[in-house]
Image (cartoon, rainbow, N blue to C red; front, side):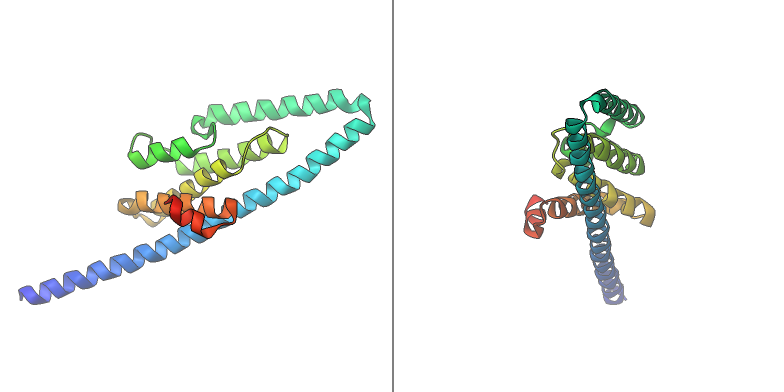
Length: 181
């Protein structure tokens, strides 16, 4: 009787491990896609930025219009920061705080606000990197998968998987993601 219970418990543990591995794969793919889409949008915005600057250089009368566009971008980023303050900076300290249990975020708000804020800020020419935001986007994707699947006990693990996938996609270096986690 005890032997049968022990075997049943081992089977449940093995199934849980396989399910966690599958969730990690889903998080890695999803976080990678989010990061790649973020990078693609930033590349497109970079070409628009260069075209806009070239046009303003050729037509100096348009410089005040360009300044108004930049002011509008700053206003939009300010509104996003008021809506979700945890999108400020690179996002890496927020992910560390989340993993340590010091910060509790609403994953979808951070994901949406970081995507929009990062695209507006970086797209308007601010000297910001895409790596930190990619890590936070990946981590929030991992948290989202955890919450949607109802697997709260694996949330930290999936957060780490997402952050690593975001880093790997940002640098196009899979081993960097493994070392990061």
